[in-house]
Image 1 (cartoon, rainbow, N blue to C red):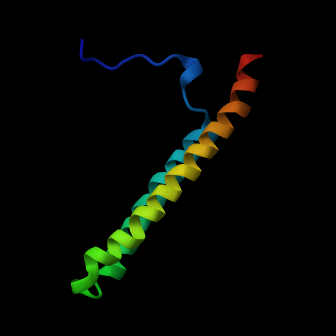
Image 2 (cartoon, helix red, strand yellow):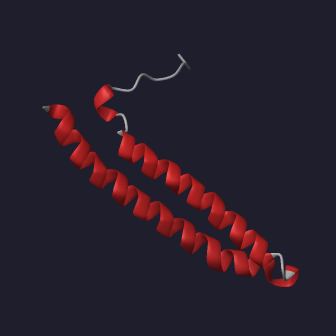
Length: 82
């Protein structure tokens, strides 16, 4: 009942899509680390600086990554269906 759900082979991510997801994860961690490091230089404005910088960077990274994954899905699906 609560076991892992089987994924249809046609719905799995291709290698290029997996690379995009991995790079996105690393970028998000780097963005978080850099924003926290720079923000901690002035503790009084840490929250304001963090909220001004991290959410726009993270949203941009996720949107671009989703675009790339979907674009690569079209090219990967064409190769798999034949």
